[in-house]
Amino acid sequence: MKRKASDGHADKMSGLGEARLWRLSPDGPLAEFVDCFWIHEGYGGAHAHERVLPTVTVDLVFSHHPDHGAAATLAGPRSECLDLDTSLPFTACGVHFKPGGALPFVSEPANELRNQIVNLDDIWGPLARRMEAQVWEARTPPERLRVLETALRLRMSHDRATHPAVSYAINVIESSHGARPIAEIAGRLGLSTRRFLDLFRGQVGISPKAFSRMRRFAAVLESIATTDDVDWTDVALSCGYFDQAHFNHDFRAFCGVSPSEYLRTRVSRTHLIVSK
Image 1: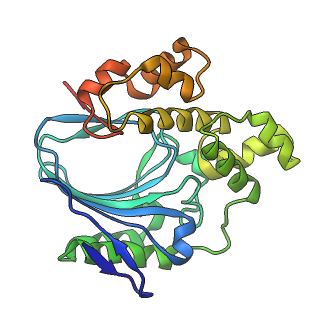
Image 2 (image 1 turned 30 degrees about the vertical axis):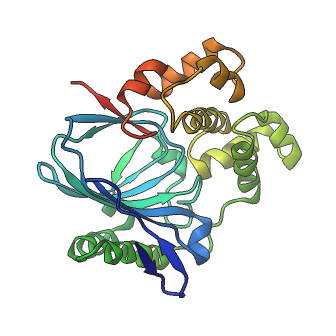
């Protein structure tokens, strides 16, 4: 499925399986900060609970659940897993920001949002309520995506750009999958370690060290995304882990389960089935 964006370029969206999923990558100024707009229709129902793994990003989420009603929330970067009620199918849509990408849209420092889920109207006030009403009044997924896109363009502050040092550090950490030492990155920027840490935490929400750990672990999950036949020692070494013990420690810290249990219970790369 394709939709034509306002400036005439074409973006691809796909509906997958019984839980229909649409994604839209933005263009123009939003592309620097937003990874994608997304919609899930009819998600859940096959099991009661899922565990959502930690993320280094901020997410804007509108949800409509049969039991819990409608909600509009802003989820900060998380170093902890999140429990998701999937006992009944529900619809959700939102904005997945790039690391540090929420800065032009949210006035609060990102580190104050760490491991927090807050009501959007506490952050955006009346705009949040108008946006929520428009999301659920929209009749089709493309119309809902358009509501999200338009609201972000209106909310975007051109005075709140990512600091060049933070942008550089994010690019280095991501391209190296967290292998570059933080002191080396700070040294190349000509900043004291303290100044670099303060800048990074304020704009990304977590420390550069935590960001590196989570990006290294994300590389692990990406490397095994399409297979159930995994040589864990090879994966650990190829993704930069010093030894198996460090690898197992991070796996437990980020997933709450062992590597073999992750393979048995994963619904997607970042969602696991859990029993209550």
